[in-house]
Structures are given as structure tokens and as C-alpha cells.
Image 1 (cartoon, helix red, strand yellow):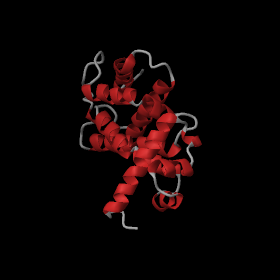
Image 2: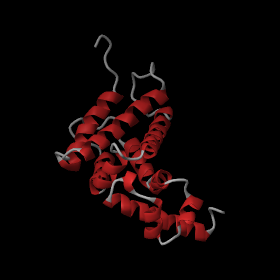
Image 3: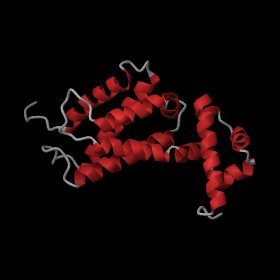
Image 4: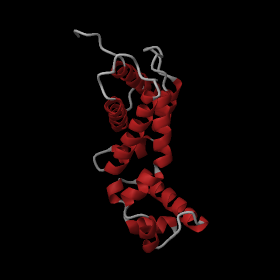
Length: 194
């Protein structure tokens, strides 16, 4: 199968739409290949021709979202005031709010470990690239760039997972501000002796 073939691209698009539709209605662990094939109006063999399992499909379906989340996190100016979350972070949490059920299912206990790992990888890559380009806060020279980026990426994924699983107090703005305050602390040097 040629992935550049327009028919294959259309089929993959239908499969992605179907899995996201099903994931909005039920836990990922309960989505069967049969139900997925039926929703996408293809046969089961076609699903397996394109994806080895539902987890791989849902991770691929969320790839654009993961990339957008990673870009938004990397765009945050680290010198923005502590009392106001940067606009890209507000937009990111607005997106998460609009898709809270899907994120809760993707990052919850029965969610997709592959998706969570992919999200951390993309965030780590974006932040490490930013830090390597000289846009890293001063005072972190004793911590490898990739470790610093992984730390912050894990924190963001953890906060998103916690927030969508809870009652979402404070709305998107409150979550963005709380994360921003933590993010700034994790991105700024701690004075020696503290």
C-alpha cells in the first residue's frame, strides 16, 4: 500500500474521524476494530491494513493536536509576568477545555500510553529545540537541555491529565495561569543556597 495514494489518504482520514468520534463517546479500551470499521464504513481488514491496533490509530488521529500543543508550549515567552498566562498557553488550555472528554479518555487510566508518550516526546522536542537555539532561561547550564525540556514536558502532560480528570476548577484561564506559574518556576534558576 502506498501511503501517498489519494485513496489510502481518504481511508486513513475516515478511520481517524471514526476513532475520534468513538473516543468522544466511550473509553478507548472499549473501542473494537469491528465498531471502528463499521463507523468508518470499511471492512476490518482495511483497518488492519492501515493500523496495527486502535491505539496506533488514535495516536495518529491526534498527531496534529499534539503538534499544536507542543508549538503552543514552546511559544510561551519565559519572561512573561507570573500573574498572566501567555496567550499561546491560554489558547492551548482553551483547546483542551473544548476537547476535555477526549483528553480525559486519552490521558486517563484506560487511555493511550502511546498517545501520552507521543505528546511528551513532541513537547520535549519543541522545548529542547527552543533551548538549544539560545532561548533557555539563564542559570540552567548545569542541567542538560533535553532533561530540562523533558521535565517541563512531563509537567504539562501531567497537569493536563489531572485537570481534565478533575472538575476543571477555574476554567481554561485558571488552568493556564496555574500551569504558567509552575512552568516559570521550573524554567527559572533557583538562587544558590535555596
